[in-house]
Image 1 (cartoon, helix red, strand yellow):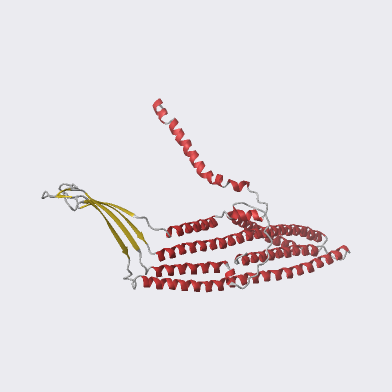
Image 2: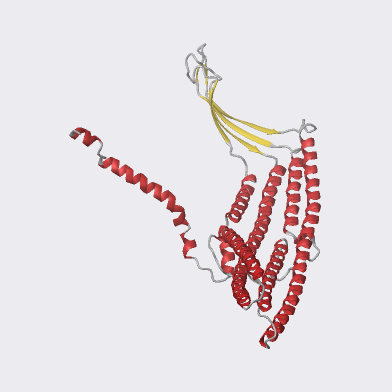
Length: 430
């Protein structure tokens, strides 16, 4: 290879700079988001209130907050007058001479026009924007309630799944203990070989159960991370059930539906106001220079003002305003029907959550009674075994069953707490 060819394949300093600059840009693009959220790495919440404060940074809540701010700004903009129009004119200028002193009608002008839209329409639009802003604030409260409920449900699920995994692993250890007991009985000459195969099957079921529970736990942790961008082992707060007072307006969704009625009312007001006039005012200052006409006759210069007032007349009201008014009134009626429908739906949901919570409470009481009876049976079997007249295998079987009962109780407690927070999340908590 000659020196020229060798030189051509060597990267120049400029190419090296471009290469490393490109690599740096790509690395920056990859790791910049991590740097932005670096506060999540060092954040160590101490209690649930810290998690709840972090939840306020959720994009959904920030979106609603920004939209509400935007609507408040729109409310101010809708109440303002449109920009005036400034006009500059050269009128009746002869093309042949393009002079301002050869032709009597030639003059210069400067004018201003101001449109004054219907004040009723402006007031209605102002109220519409304010009502939408208030509706977004209600939506913010409702969405915060739902996200808070999702966070608490995630924490409840996490605690329950960790406990169920722990109990399942304890059962596996008990099965191992039971295997040894059965082997001892076989060595003693008892015909219980079939128990070993059954134990192997039950241990395989436990292993499969643990794998499923760990997969569920990973999904729950991912859900919590999507809400607050960190993993946490903080336990959920106390969850007393908030009783509904019977007033539909105690529900978030009903309040949102009522806000839609208010928005529809402002639309009716706006359409009704369209029958009134919109005004316009224009003023024009005109100036003529002194000069001499084509016939040699002189003319003097002069200045004068022109003014104009305009207003709209609803001549086509039957084809424009009337149909629009009927549509606005229909939308208002539909919004009222929506309130009635949502009130029934959300009340039914709240009662269903409360009923499932009550059922879970009843199941917990029943399971705890069964667990107590089982523990008494285990204690009696242990006493019999210690007296030398019984077997040890039934005792281990009883301990395995006890762990199963504890797992069921943990599951029912989680279900009760989840139903409690779901019911509470529907209500406006004051």
